[in-house]
Amino acid sequence: MKKIIIFIVYFFAIGAFSSAIAGTSGNTSVCPVMNGEINKSISFTYKDKDYYFCCPVCVNTFKANPEKYISKIKSSKFEAYQFAFSPEKIVVKKGDIVQLSVSSRDVPHGIYIKEYNINVPVRKGEVKTIEFLADKPGVFPITCSVYCGRDHSTMSGQLIVES
Amino acid sequence: MKPIRFDIKNFLIALLLLLFIIKIPRENIYFVFWMLYGILLCCSFDLLIQKFFLKRKLTIKSAIITGFIVSGIIDYNQPWYILLIFSLIAIISKHLIKYKNKHIFNPANFGLFCASLFGVPLTWNIESNIYLIILAGLYIIYRLKKIAHLISFVSVFSLLSLVWFQINPLNLINWFFVFVMLIEPKTSGAGLVKGIILGSVSAGVGMILFKIFPQIDIFVCGLVFANLAIFLQSLLSQAKT
Image 1 (spheres, each protein chain N blue to C red):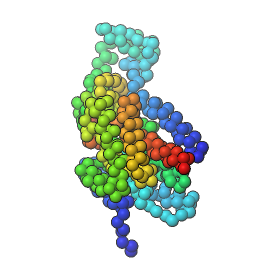
Image 2 (image 1 turned 90 degrees about the vertical axis):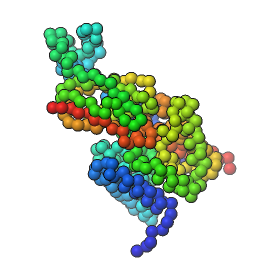
Image 3 (image 1 turned 60 degrees about the vertical axis):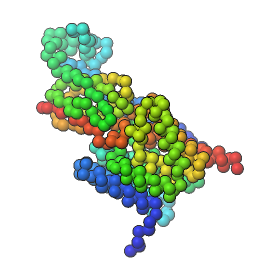
Image 4 (image 1 turned 30 degrees about the horizontal axis):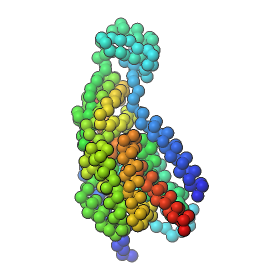
């Protein structure tokens, strides 16, 4: 009996920890110059907007030709609702840095793009930013990872990365 | 050849098979392989455990049901080992986490709960026709005498959806879960009191999770807590007597 209780408590503790980790995937930001992971302490403001970089060298490279690097950043809104996504397709070019401001119109949904290891839950009223480097060309399905009702399994969108 | 006897497990297998067949035209061929692979895995694991560890008469129906549920709910675009791991967890939980020869957790649900905790998306592909599920489910509920479980779950779920989230519960409720998974005979308990406990704990915990942890599947997680509550209630009743 004791063993069962210890097992259950232990299991729930591991589960809570792992789910906390799993829920954070897909929120890393990308350096516009080297495409590495950003360091929040290294930034530069250009046209009233803050840009973050992986190292001080990238700041200088960016300053030399900011428009070149800004043009690689593709920002768009992406909304989930019962039982579709808007827009249905996101089209970017290989090498672009994709910034999606994701939201939900009704119940909680999960933005899931397996090939890019993105799984971000979003509730009604929230806006979350998903940022990633589109480094793999192809057509990738976007599905909902949080059960959202009767036609949950039919929710689908597409990320198209052109080479 | 022995004729197939009509019992509730056969009926459930037939229902799951029909739901699977209905879904095939809407999915790709990989979905078919994924489902067959899941059923095969669960049956193989269960038979191996029964033969080599428990040394008892081999039965396969429960494993087929578990296989249908686990593979029909986990996203079939996942790598093959994901299904292997969580099918194995489902079957092992049936034989390992038990008290007085009865498993505590619904095996398929426990496997899915673990998958959900580890961030594996549950797409519920098997829920292909809710009208068929409701119709067949009502018959299963009647045969298993689980009406209290159904009413308490639906009531608490509807009440919390409306009051707490202002969501039409009919747009959110998962009928496959209600009619197939919630009322698993060995873990859902019998009678009015256990029915009320199971239904209300499952719906209540699910809705709390819906608020704070939407990335975890609210139905499977709620049922794990409800199975635990039924187990604890049984222990308390035994201690009193």
